[in-house]
Length: 275
Image 1 (cartoon, helix red, strand yellow):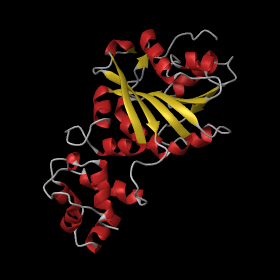
Image 2 (cartoon, rainbow, N blue to C red; image 1 turned 120 degrees about the horizontal axis):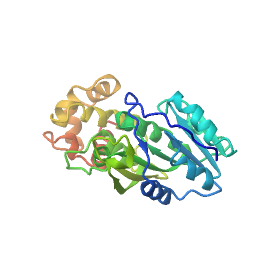
Image 3 (spheres, rainbow, N blue to C red; image 1 turned 45 degrees about the vertical axis):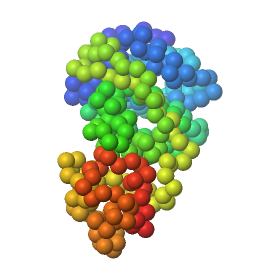
Image 4 (tube, rainbow, N blue to C red; image 1 turned 90 degrees about the vertical axis):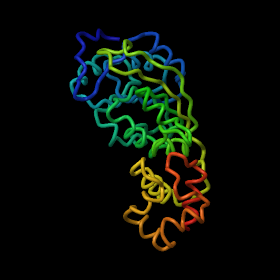
């Protein structure tokens, strides 16, 4: 491995916090347990703290980095590793299934920027056909929202989405001092394994996610009030079925409940009542 030289300072605009703590790096690697027969995607390699271990253990490493100023550093640092492939691009628009070809499946590891972490998570779920498992580091509060069960105030759209498609496990917390510069908040590492099939028997998943999204539109309002203000296709379907109140009654969901109290099965019942 070539000398990494002087490292660029993390960009505040991009929300960068470079991981530097070796114990944390090792714990993430242990959780991922890469092997020589697989392809690993790394989002946001930064200066290569995790990458330097991944290229030694994985068959292929596809590193997706948005910050162009890191290109020379990463290119030079891993020039001696033919299994390293740097993709300069935005994780929000990258086609991960195309990036891993000829491999059909990959696992993914990432230290996600706090400011766009939930958006990237939704993107990754949309590309689940080529992803088996993800080990992600996010802001601790985001992990709490992702894992929030029905009936808790942290529950939101992302909680229901992840519950439907993934088996989840929080692994450990990471203190601010593990990064350069230290963020103002703690981070958490979690594992997400994609289910063989969505955790509901609904065929119209587009309608499911439109309904969940509308239900959480204003969290302080009841699900009835939120669905009454639905738009587009969902509004048309609700009208055809007699309106939001009729739909909720058919689904056996009390009209004054808030979206955060509904389980995935109850969301599914609401959608079935419109079909």
